[in-house]
Length: 598
Image 1 (tube, rainbow, N blue to C red):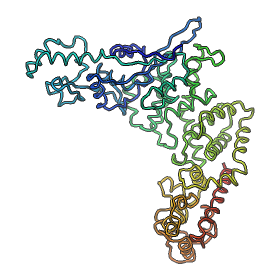
Image 2: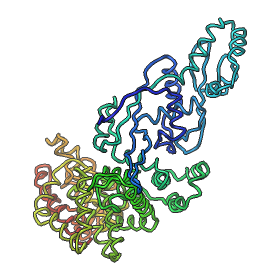
Image 3: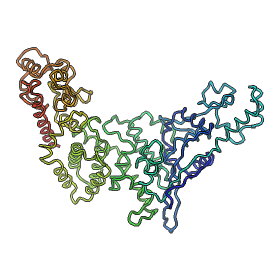
Image 4: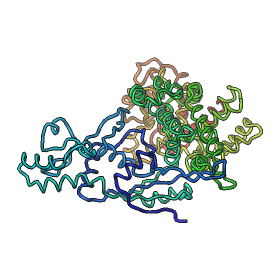
């Protein structure tokens, strides 16, 4: 069987397919991202006879019904949505949703004299040489072409045959053919992805989440579009709460649904620690509810695939949509979401900048929901989730092939006889003595401040309530919340002047600390033994020059909290490499002690 067919279809036929649902546009309720000028350029290209590319549709797999017959699915538009939406706006006059979820018209004007297209505006509407809205002009029976040509040619002194030719050329845009690649229903999701990548001239990879969301949105029988909107709107409200009223007033159908009330609370939440995208919501809901980690399986299940018989069955579709909807509802549940955020913060993760991998946060939420589903006590849930998230950060568990790792973890966690015991054993296996005493120490040998090891060190300091380096009262939490600075303990300029000119040397994370800016300015480019001598003097009663620490015991504790070797007080550039080695060990030890407290 052929994997695809390539054919041509007229624009009018194509738009008819969209209107009657033969071709479903999965993104139809999402904001139209093209600018008006792009719509104008598309219409101009069609008028000039230039190619505007293929569209790609994918026929849903035939589903085996209970009576043994098969139901042929819709054509899902997987590439070309922006172009098709632009055509419906310009040629049919349909409204689109802008970035603020407000409906608007995009009117394209045409000047017969110059054969120029422009986005219509009040000034153009007043100029009679322009057709101010070509969609009105193209409506069947809207004008008498003979009278229009005669009047226009007389008014502007142009040959009526020329006017007639240009009018016919404009009207014939709807008869222009566009190439369509129709992918077979027999193709697997992997094959569809591969074909898309090979055909798409820009080489943009269509993600598995995009395929899944496309599949969800075109299902009517099992409320797929409600699931799609719940995911989309929840993510949008979390980032742009001001758009809530626009969406509620413009999407009256969805506004009447119970699910809107279940997601509306997020608009009042002032929290940026975990702001999920639609991919994150889909991944969490699917992995948690289906106990699988690969989103390609979701598309197959939503199509009704029986993985054992390789048939497509209606009952599997019904069950899959029911499970997915339940997973989404659990994700957007206010209690679940807020409690998960609370657990993250209780581990010291108070800011989104402290976790580089969104997948770590995603699987942490999956684990939280799974443990709740299994009836585990709240105290054990909190401890287990905290420890798993930090373990995942330190081992970069979900950095490479995250879907495979999600799949591995969810299956074993779900199948474990004692899930808490399994979690503890897995953590102990990953974070053994060799990791703490050797591997982690070596991982601190890097100049990359975005490294998960530096980030986790800061998380540990926040959890332990440590003060900033040389600060008496300002703690690391406050420095992070107020976007405090990361500064060099051995000043950068001082090191460069003494032979350490390479960034790999002076920017080592073992040479960094959270430090108040004013203290850093006072230190300037002084050697450690110079500025630390002054701090000892102020601890012995002299005037404060560097921060507000004024007793030796407080200074010693501050150095311990910031993993500064005690002999640092006497160090200069000749001791720099020795300092780095000592501090890496102290930083690794701090993380080990911190982890025990989780």
